[in-house]
Amino acid sequence: MIKKEITDLELKEFLSSLEPDKMHIFTMAEGRARGALFHGTRFVNQIRVQHNLGILESYILGQAALASALTIPMMKDTEHTVIRFEGDGSAQGYSIEADSSGYVRGYLFNENIPILKPLENWDLTEFLGKGTLTFSRIHKHDKFPQSSTVSVDSSNIAKDFAQYFAQSEQCNTAFNTSIQFDKQGRIIGAGAMFVQIMPKTGGTNKIGSQVDSRDQDNLEDEKLIQNIQNAFTACPSLGQIYSENKVDSEDIIVGLFREFNPKIAVQRDILFDCHCNKEYYENYVKN
Image 1 (tube, rainbow, N blue to C red):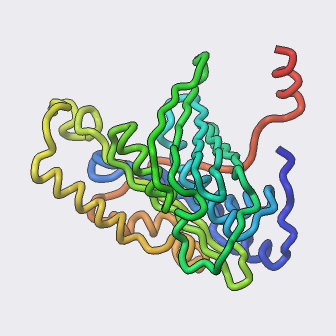
Image 2 (image 1 turned 60 degrees about the vertical axis):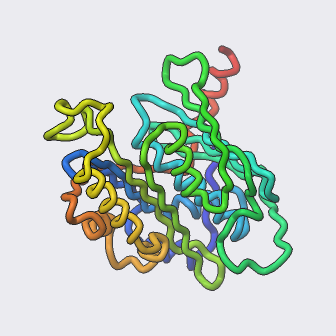
């Protein structure tokens, strides 16, 4: 990918004042839950300039790319995932590729979405509509990708991803994506977070090896899960938080999930880019 430069000098100066883009991956509740918080303000701005997008188009593709980036910590070994939504709305859909190496790239099917009336909110039903969300995963030695598709209504991309994991992966996973614009339409803050409840078997420090995976969650465990969900739901707008530059990512994680003793496992870079180059394509064509 030939990366385009952000030419808005005022925006560039503002971005330089922010906390670096970074993904913080964490566990909590003695391994009963895991999650990641991604500060992606520069990430979403790069998407916008790369595709020369308007506000609505930046919002849709940015949300999809942020949510897709959150799937990277869930990947096993060397993995590449294509996440594709096809809908009956005016945007038609999107395609995002996320790689375990930390690279994300993607595009909208229609990058010039018609807007027939002033927007009253960020409900995306009119633009994405009802459709299907497909995850296609391929590992290093796979000959063919493994794909799974669910139907979604696409009023909210984060909820679409949560619905996919609930139906296809049978895994209780919550997503939060957020983009903040200023009065001039600049992207001044962007962030995303997921929290996933892990199965008892093999997943916790104290009880993982002692619990049959067929056992139903007991009342205490149900209460723990509900409390984690409540804490997640209490998260304010991540885009606004990052635009204000008053707290860093670790403060956000600790502030939301303090009672579950969260531990940062790793920090990593996530880039809207492609590590392909001329040599890569020459070898691809030859082989």
